[in-house]
Image (cartoon, rainbow, N blue to C red):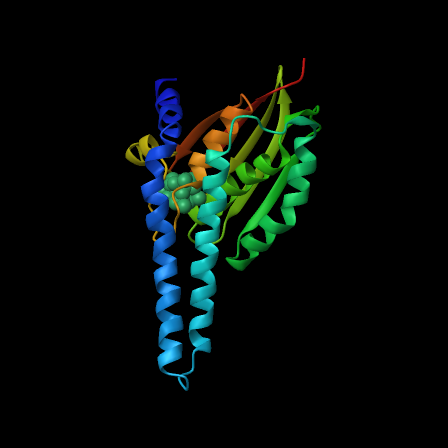
Length: 223
Ligand code: ADP
Ligand code: MG
């Protein structure tokens, strides 16, 4: 619980994140500007080979802005009674496409669940961030399993990967904005997950071993 509180505290430091954001957005802008400048000074140079790089730099900047906005958004979320399975079903093609690119499989085990109060946009981001982390944790092949089921007065979402697990040191820092171990990571994905979970009065638990990691999200059922 203490760790959970520490994470929530960090989420309140949005103001301090401004400098980080500025830095993260400025990097891709500098890169793209450099290429455009170069293309102007060398009109005959083949620039098309740099287009993919420019597009991916801009995509990254865009992703950072989207995630930051989710974090910074004011507390009134747009939650209404709907089914978690429907949201996951709709996301499945996107996650599946991402998995196939790196030879991985996505298994859905969606059990009948009662409707709960959800903000669809936010839950999409939560599921997507957890799923992408799971896929990225598996170096070659493997299964990502997304499971839902009701238990007592909760609806539980589990996202399991077959990666090599998370060390205690990394576990302590997960959810801190900009903490990443990836060269192309934003380090905002888990901060977004904790923020979305808090706005849904849901809790996140992590079970990890050398055989893989499972993220559990516990939602409260409607009374
Ligand atoms: P990013 O994915 O951009 O690095 P996140 O906030 O999504 O940022 O995750 C932060 C860090 O937490 C990751 O860089 C990784 O080290 C660790 N992590 C998150 N999910 C997993 C997972 N399923 N398996 C192993 N490590 C993970
Ligand atoms: Mg991530």
